[in-house]
Amino acid sequence: MRDIKELMRPSAAVLEPYDPKFTPVEINLSANENCYAPVDIHDKVMRELELTPMNRYPQPLAPRLRKHIAALYRATPEQVIVGNGGDELIFNLFLAFGGGGAKIVNCPPTFSIYRLYAELCECTVVDVPRDPKTFALDEPALLAQAADARMTIVTTPNNPTGTLTGLDFIEKLCAAAEGLVLVDEAYLEFADAPSAAKLLDRFPNLIVLRTFSKAFGLAGCRVGYVLASPAVIDALAAVRQPYSVNVLSQIAAETVLKQLPRVQELVAEIVEQRAFLSEELSKFDELTVWPSAANFLLVRVPHAHRVWETLRDEHSILVRDFSSTPGLEGCLRITVGRPEENVAVVEAFMDILALAEDWEDE
Ligand SMILES: *Cc1c(COP(=O)(O)O)cnc(C)c1O
Image (tube, rainbow, N blue to C red; front, side, top):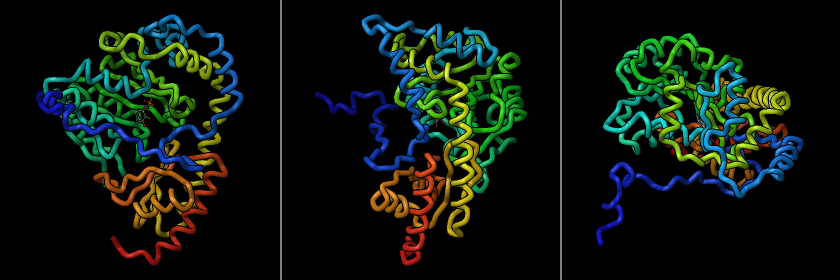
């Protein structure tokens, strides 16, 4: 028999299994989840789950949830499709629209999944890097590259930099591109900014991605959705696995949507905590803290990897280490936690930065 790797699709043979590197810790601020996990919402979801039959297949397009989402954006259900997390929808976009070396434009540093899935689906990824200091988009270069691209991706607020992109630029981009424009709004609930969804009626090439994983606190349930023109939605419906969003996840998402005012209350608390954490961390001379419109902060710190390790091993705090990602040298990403967790982060930095004065330069 031949070597298994030789039997693989070449674009898959180069990949390693994904490892989120979750270590058991007391304070997990590594994955931009909603750290509040409110009991009242949890209880309501559990009550609905109990009433949900599990012997029947789910409705593929989750019609009740789809209608509810459409109403939030004054869109029609035909402009909405749900997926097994936003990640599945990103994959399905490349499956439906990529392949054969199709040109995908990406703006790093950003979410690593885009390049990974695009290449797996045999697309060619062209990078238009963000400004190395401010992480702002290179707007003229992006407009030029987008013109003949199959799909251009803008994440706003961007992960992991927290950078917001204005709708006026998204509008220009949609007008300049002959292909699709994906606006990933996974964190938009935490920003004081309108959704690009309001441009949908003007631009049939616009795709807006949202998720229940961050503000809505359902990362474990895996539900995301896309808002786009009915033709784009049809293409995604054609390639999707019909039952990818299970009955329990559909019910969970519907139930949290009915709790929208409560979710908005929690989001407001997270935004306040973001200001607290940002202000406190900015007081350390050694740290650079970027402004963030999301539920996390990107910081640059000397000896970043060792700081990350010490946070984990001595303080039981897990954050995300980006220090070996190009353009993010010395950077850690810290999810905004509950008030006592954020205080623990500030105190841990106080300890570690005092120790780090004696660390040799790497
Ligand atoms: C978290 C995230 C998503 C989607 O996550 P899911 O849990 O798969 O819904 C999409 N884009 C970005 C930039 C994210 O950070």
